[in-house]
Image (cartoon, rainbow, N blue to C red; front, side, top):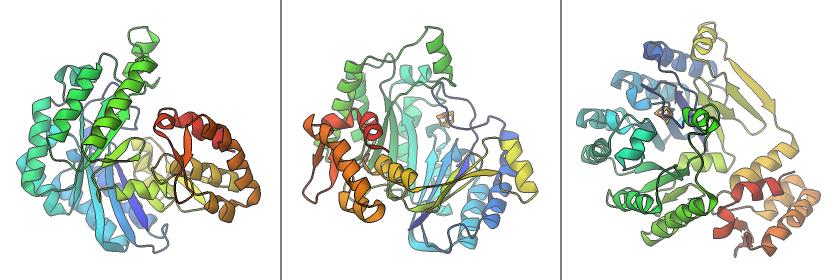
Length: 375
Ligand code: SF4
């Protein structure tokens, strides 16, 4: 299985917490779409003929694409790559862009899964994060997508936001469950230095929520999703049975993928590439038929770390037999040795098929455990 990720690096304004690569220079959008199509031509051999089972158009704000631009992107993929009949084709959208016409256009263009950046159902919180939409617009967007025929809808929510109480977080989840959606991605806010929140923090105007409140909100999340029948299949991802994000599973299971567009990353099993995070530099380089990317060849240690980092975050966990077969006895012993203290503290457990997974307690400190198991 292989996947394609397309990065649309345009936003009308910058959210205060966001450190993804994006530009607010909308005038470059048309040029960028043609450059994306050209980059696909230049890199059409990257996946060595593997069948494409997932396509993900992310950003930035892909819902700012005009219908013809979205169509050109999907057609370029189908022309250059072999796509499966049941390819999962996801687009990320911002609620304020989703009118009934846009929702209808998205389904006609060929998208069969939508990820909606709701982030919060609370207007006070939305304003504090500098989001463009209101709670009312988010309701309408989901209704419009469902009326247009989308059945596979995912919502993005953020918790752990300064000023968001546990009660407000629980209320956000209650509203979410009334929307009949199949998949949820919930991220704890991290204040990154390069963002507006980051400079507010530096000036002492904002601080992270305390650890106790953070754990309380995570606990509300895991409890409420479980009660509603959602499977907690990755630290930040939950779904009803059968609605896993195939694209994200590809990342976590070391499938090969090609990333197209400024700042997009690619992986083909033995190397990683990443395009420059600079729209003008990207356009100039593609105009000269050069892909502006850097490359890193992965050695055995890096591959092992990559496997630990991605697999432990999921409910499928680490397969010790795979480590033995792929990296040898020495790495297997290293893993078992490093994992032993986390078993003792109740942060890791072995499940029936011998795989090693995080316990509920372990999920709260996953990053530290992952670091502790890496080489
Ligand atoms: S969060 Fe999304 S919409 Fe907001 S600035 Fe970042 S990429 Fe743009």
